[in-house]
Amino acid sequence: MRRVSLALGLSLLVAATTAIAGLPVIVHEGRPYIELDRLAQTLGATVETGSVKASLRTPRNVVTLTRNWSQIVVDGRPLVLDDPVRVKGGAWLVPESFLERVLPRLTPAPLAKTAPPTRLDELRVRSYPSFTRVVIETASPLAYRIESSAGKEARVRLLGLGGEPRTESLDDGFVDEVRLDRAGADGILRVIFTGKPGELKTSTLSDPPRLVLDFHRPGGDAPGERADRATPLRLIVLDAGHGGHDTGATGPTGLAEKDLVLDVTRRVAKLVESDLGVRVLLTRSDDTFIALRDRTSIANRERGDLFVSIHANAHRQIDSAGVETYFLSSEATDSNARQAAAVENSVVQLENPAGGRGRDIVKAILWDLAQSTFQVESSRLAEIVQDSMTRSLRIPNRGVKQAGFYVLGGAAMPAVLVEIGFVTNPREERRLREARYRDDIARAILAGLAEYKRHWDQRMRAADMRSR
Image (cartoon, rainbow, N blue to C red; front, side):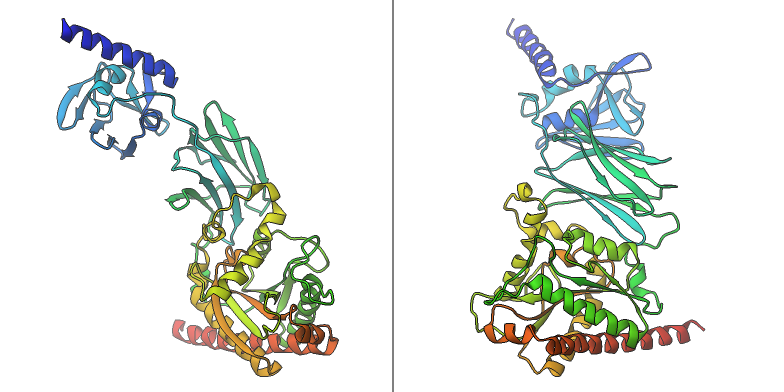
């Protein structure tokens, strides 16, 4: 009698918890099925799939399934289901009888309540010369399924993802826009292409949890391939920091960083085009606010060879003086470097004041990891520019440093950030107001770029000789 009651109790438990979970039933070949991914998400389990076999893992159990077979293995013991396991549209399906036959065998007891939706923290999109990257950052690991990656649209189902629909317009010549729509309890990511879609590669990262989707342009280079290619230096992208409602640092007598660096950047641009014969692209040519991520996206779309962001420094100690040059790294050189990056990265709050969640901004910018390919070249460029500036300006050398600058994070090319002086130092602010001194700064940056171009051209000629 006890055995019958226990069995009846388990059946009732399964029926009740299934109703609570609300797992949708899919009719396949006239028989009821449940998606394995959805079941695993509700259980807090993980799924590993191959072309023939799949496994469902809980902390204490392993269930092995074989495609088109009704026999499964639960913790090493065979069990026959009413219907075979199927795969439809890339999704593994288990017969509805799986709930009653298998769940009571799992420890701990399954399906206590409906699994809460996974919170979307951020959707980021970045254009590179050879691919477009979409990153979905969430509060907890996210299960997903690629439903389609052919035609004019790619569709990825994000299982249990909460949040409101949103759209990111891109129009980078490859991807028109990225949409995140609702589909019941799931999110549907839709990537709309301008023309023919390329190959899709996916990866997952942690701390914070992220799903990374790379859509490669048809016939495009692999990420980082341009770093090893011997081509002439054709385009330098100059980025004047801040702008618009983002004034940057302000000096004792009111000198605004945004105005200072725009003027210096324009002077550098004229010198580079006239003296080096290299085309220059300005991310901003007037007092306009440009989001940090858009600055390197502009450079990537135009296939820039170098990215140089020009800023002015600030410090609570008003006697701080000198110039310093940075390249991107997750580890800051010292506390001053960490503070400088934090000040520049705070602009993100101006882009989306309601989006600040107090999380580590360095983790947010290293999602794309593109600069790891160009880090050596970025370091070389930083050394040459820093040496040229301190030698020409006869100003304290604060050295080459590394830190997590958001604005450098997405550059698919060598990229540096130059701090041309401290506007918070009264003596330096007076000099930075002078047109003649601004010319000196521009010529010093030019000299560094000229030296780097000389090394670039030497390597290109050496590569040409080796290829003959």
